[in-house]
Length: 418
Image 1 (cartoon, rainbow, N blue to C red):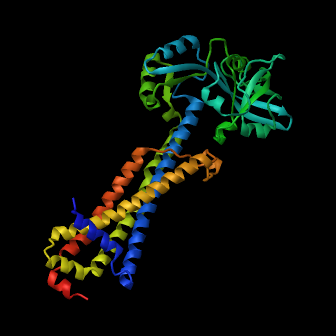
Image 2 (tube, rainbow, N blue to C red; image 1 turned 180 degrees about the vertical axis):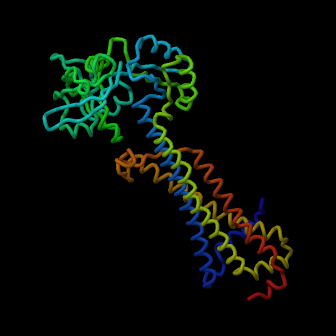
């Protein structure tokens, strides 16, 4: 730990007593540049970490809202029988919070002759909590109205394509027969199954590929239009207490149910999307860290120039009995001062920007590329502590090089130096 005298001299080096001299003013200017570099590097790194974490959490929440933590399906291209029994088995599995029966098949949805779109009709036992929060118009009421029309909840993008709003009637066309999942148009046996639905609500998740395809209704209505029996399912959506255990839970569930059922975690179902998120998490912080490293080199340059400017003062200090260790501490402390001020400014700037982005969404994103309209952010105190500690350590290491140079100056030559 440097003494009070060593800390005082370190501050004098940076402030430059002879402030009117051109060299001293330049050294002070370079010191501020180095401080600003540390501040910008720290702020940029923290912003990158906050955005990457926000992306991961937001995308994971959206994906789990669509597909739960574990999906149980069959290897066969046919409905799963004894759905109620299998659901009870899943619900009794350790770590499972909920198991829901899902009926889902592709179909056509028509409002008029000019407005026809392909969709995936999903019937569920109860409305997912996630989607109830994403409703932008109407409600998640999928029960039949007084006219017998079951409610249908569709994505905003699909609603724009069909030009519909809550209360309007649309017709679904299913190409699945009641036998073994045959397509009657190919087999030429029967006409498509049709059913009229009432648009109950419109949701928006900003996941364009999902909002334009998935529509939700009650389990009974989906079974009717998709030719499923009363105890049949397409798959089961399993919700866990901890999403991080999804892969392990999938293995346990699959071994418990046996062939022909298989269980896949959300990380396997949407592997490409999560691989993209992990790539961002690994690359972006590394790239942004280069800014902090460049700032550390600025500290080396600043303190070397300070050494050159203060050579005579260093010689005088040595002639008065200052040791090499004391001189070295003075310059290391100078680097610590630059780093400390830079880190404090950088973390304050990052905190302010993250809070502003979280409240006002200042940074917008192309929805089709990033699945979001604004950059999400997520604050973690650990990120601030770790980034600050690493930046300070880097600044101290950078200061050690000029500190050794300054400590090695001979007193007699330094006093004669002009």
